[in-house]
Amino acid sequence: MTIARVGVDLAKLVFQVHGVNRAEKVQQRKQLRRSQMLGYFGKLEPCLIGMEACSSAHYWARELSKLGHDVRLMAPQFVKPYVKSGKNDANDAEAICEAVGRPSMRFVAIKTVEQQVIQAGHRIRSRLVKSRTALTNEIRGFLAEFGVIVAKSLGPLRRALPELLEDAENGLPGDFRVLLMGLSEELRALDERIAAFDARIAQVAREDDRIKRLLEIEGIGAITASALVAAVGDATQFNSGRDMAACFGLTPRQHSSGGKNRLGRISKRGDKYIRMLLVHGARAALNAAKHKEDGRSRWIMNLADRRNKNIATVALANKNARIAWSILSRGESYRKAA
Image 1 (tube, rainbow, N blue to C red):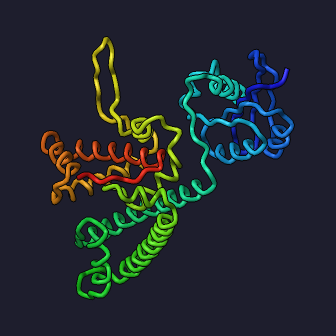
Image 2 (image 1 turned 90 degrees about the vertical axis):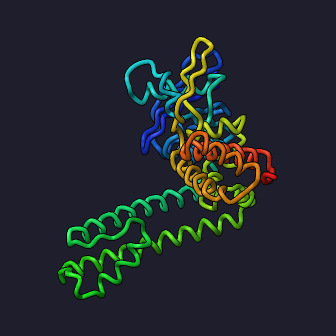
Image 3 (image 1 turned 45 degrees about the horizontal axis):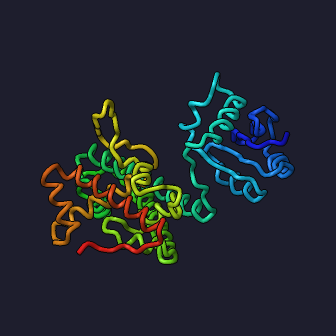
């Protein structure tokens, strides 16, 4: 009998394949080298292929889809319960093969090349921002050792560095000035690289209609909008806005039983980078809502008064995620509150 469903355990060089027929009988268990993958699946009749959504998964999903196969990606935590015994490649491939056949399984949408390019830019920019933060903390710590205290945040440090290097009477040793000059140049180089990525993201935002429609939402800027499009595409893989908000960890945890609903803090599952962007954007929108009189602003300010600003900020981030789902999945434009 022909193979109807295949589970593939991905790796860098050696892949494990587990195939079953329509009667759930094992038809194939074998290892494939990277160079053998396309040749092997090119000879198979179109079938259902399951893989974990990990490194290189989206590339292989696109390539195998071109061969006529139905490729589906799954989050690794949803595959883990189907592993029957010890951890090895053969058992993992068998678990993937079984999980992909479950009717209630949740699947990850396959990203396009354009989505992955945008996402790569965001990840590089995020790394540069973290490096800049570490560098500024290091500079501020070195200066404190010589009795020079600079206010927190990046702006005061940028303004203080040239003045400290030019002031010959501030007590800084000459050798340390040389080191401080090198750190100042390193900080300037990081600023320039981050600015280049910001300009690149802004250019993408001007060219993509989906991003331009997301920019109409209060609390979502070019960086957040492009990150959303890179992560979820047209968002049609989600059945509702709540599902997309849950994907970013913005919905409360549940511990309900016996008809009693118990909701806790947000789950903080999924993509923490987008969750961070949505929360930061919501915080900025909350500050701007103080000077507005529309219904949305009144709602968020009333919530902040009843509870606290942090709860209101997360609630607004949740709402923005749901609005973004509606805009992306239905092709709508944002309708501002009256």
